[in-house]
Amino acid sequence: VHYFFLVVLIAADKKKVQIGVKKRVDHCPVKSRKGDVLNMHYTGKLEDGTEFDSSIPRNRPFTFTLGTGQVIKGWDQGLLGMCEGEKRKLVIPAELGYGDRGAPPKIPGGATLIFEVELLSIERKSEL
Image (spheres, rainbow, N blue to C red):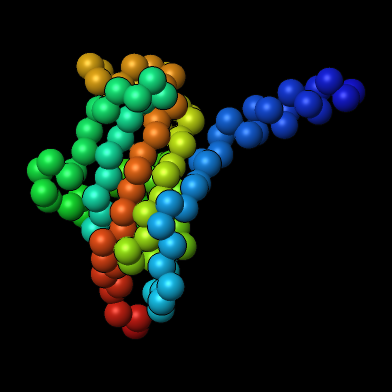
């Protein structure tokens, strides 16, 4: 029984995003939530350090609506409760990234993804 329980814990842990805050913000009147439009800079790497994408060289932030499935699940989970100006490191298991298929040719199947992200701004639709 103990062995089975241990296996369940390990399997459950692989489906979580690890979030590390790299830069905190002193004044944070608004935290990101589902439905907000986020403007982000990001760099994505594989576990071996190979960079597969980054918005920084393009000098064009990536914009999307949080919690609506426009991005991988790891982003929809890992970017909640973030402040403008905050920087995070997200370690995203394959199940919350591109899964067993990956995103060829740059992201192999089963890859854990590591993102350095910076939230530049939050656009919130006015409440009705």
